[in-house]
Image 1: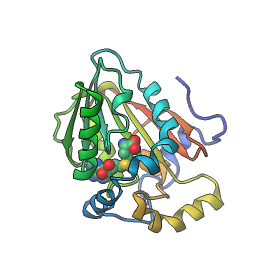
Image 2: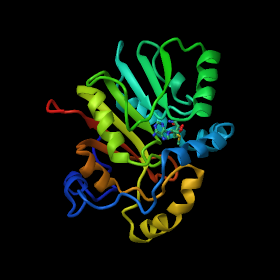
Image 3: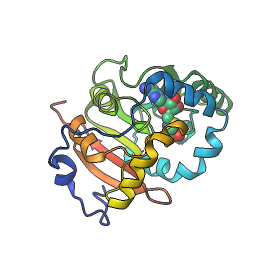
Length: 237
Ligand SMILES: C[S@@+](CC[C@H](N)C(=O)[O-])C[C@H]1O[C@@H](n2cnc3c(N)ncnc32)[C@H](O)[C@@H]1O
């Protein structure tokens, strides 16, 4: 599998162990679930138009990194309008969870329209998954972690429900390593939350605090300001 982007000079060690990464705040912005649910209530009817094609290359690349095999159990956390639902092979079983009623309603319509009998949809908070430990072969969060109040708790839950040896895949925008861009992202983050995401999530801090050791981090989409982070859950959990 491809490892760290050659263009990204930060290597694995820096992502995991940069000085205060284990303790520093991930973002200048804080949100609550009620606020997020309200944002997606308003966005549900236009979501696919605004965030469909522009973010799609990353979704397709994530599918490749998952390496889904026949019979695999896949959990998509923050399934939204079900925009990924038809991308999964019909030979795997997919569980999609989301906080928002109105996004799930769109997902249900899509699943019915496309006749996707391998997909089930549940309302659930990503920070408090109701599945037992080790329930899934692949746990995937596309464009989710920068919209939740506690990204670290969500990542811990994702890892908990993934079986040892399974994949935890996170597709998201994280704060740039470029000084000027990173300042700009911090400045706009309190505003971007109103269209559904924090622009300044700190990837090294997120990985360190969630105790995730990625096997690859790739830049995706155009412009390539989004990261596809693939992790394999170790035997120790
Ligand atoms: C940016 S959308 C991503 C949708 C889809 N995964 C995609 O690829 O476009 C984020 C989704 O996460 C959901 N969400 C936000 N907070 C959540 C939470 N705490 N638990 C579960 N889903 C949540 C939102 O309702 C929304 O549907």
